[in-house]
Image (cartoon, rainbow, N blue to C red; front, side, top):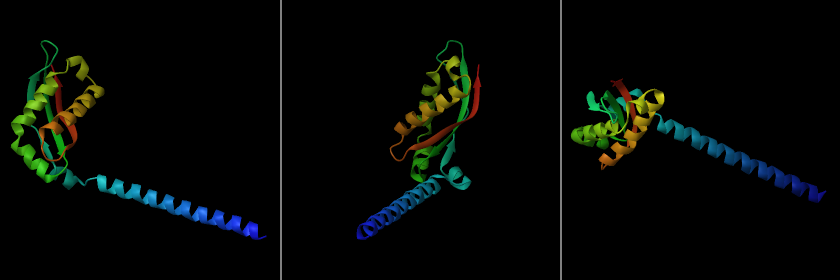
Length: 141
């Protein structure tokens, strides 16, 4: 009988510890999710819009007209971006010009250029990072 009580005690302790651990990790995920989602005001406060940019594409005789919204990691990075508009514009032109018209057609082309710009623009800034880039205007000729 004493052995049975010990086994039941160990099982109950294991269940309590497992339940506590599950609760802890689930709460941690919920808090992390809440922290990463920004309100509309925060997004507006941390993002910049580029001018409309026209540039040649890698494919001969083609050009693109683009505009982007760039979400930055913090206010300091936004201030830096506003001071480095020439560098941001140059990075965008170089990136867009490296693609052919065929590569940019469709949703996959837009996604590809957004991802490439996140990487390239993060290199431009000394402070912070680029969280995401959205294409807000896109025409190919």
